[in-house]
Image 1 (cartoon, helix red, strand yellow):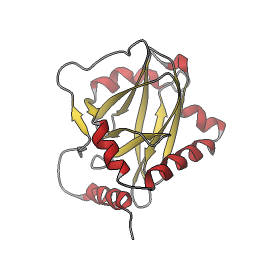
Image 2 (tube, one colour):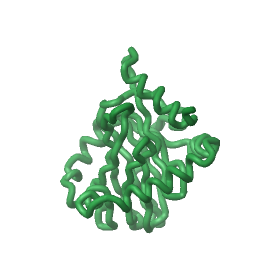
Image 3 (cartoon, rainbow, N blue to C red):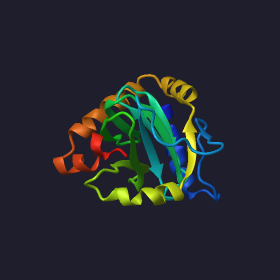
Image 4 (cartoon, helix red, strand yellow):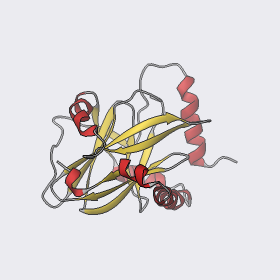
Length: 199
């Protein structure tokens, strides 16, 4: 029998072939009214998850951290920010493959992570790409900002939903760490943010 999470993901992929002109929207993300908050407070780091691609536009990708905390839902053509304590964090995009990025964050700086959809055999998946000094992606930041709309996570509602999935949540967080540890050095370079990568 399909678990709740897997059933929802399967339904989302089926939606790829359904009619409709708009991207999927998440019950756990809210539009941002007025100017987008910029920068980070002196005791926090800001991480912006940006998904400029319209590929798999009917599919929502949930992003959690290594503790199983809800960070946000990534939807096509949108971005959202989270404010985190300085130090080490793992970001896990919760699909069948739970691909992962790692960040060591410095206070007062803003970092970017690109969410890239890709097609699997049965369902859409996504990978996380660190916008770091080695990747060449930093030049894309202006277009990331101009080509996406801004949303903000409803952390309480998103976390309540994830908690309702029971053991699936800690299993996904554990699998995300294992995924990162299994990357080659070259792969890790593509998914790692260092303190100096912040702006």
